Image (cartoon, rainbow, N blue to C red; front, side, top):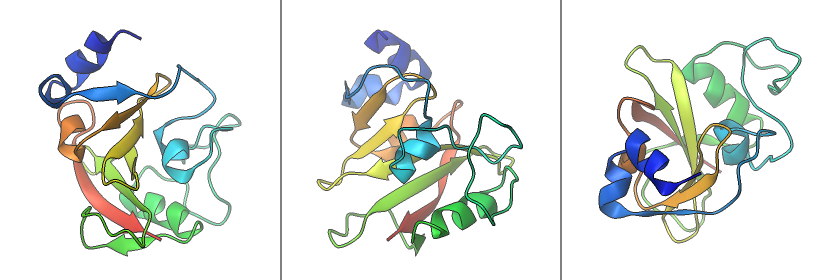
Length: 143
């Protein structure tokens, strides 16, 4: 995917830069990428094509995403600031509270995101992806 597609979707990336770190792959999405799973598409909707952790609510809500990641050992974090002893993820949501995206923090404090079925990217700040497509970051989790 040409870089200009990312820059059109996320104008802040043009200003700060980003790195494409994988080829397109439709097997997994941003939620799966944040969870460390590149073998299946994670989403809470009832679907034979989407995975969601057993015993968690299958609804498109921030609470459901928090529950899902709790099954992986995550709990709420006060911020997205780098804490070397923790792995962190961020949940983005639209203005109406529907989750839209997740990102995972890398050991150096930068972030990695899977953009839908497109490539994975490495970006400096979470704000690089905030806007019309993904809304804003609403929750940080750590383990």
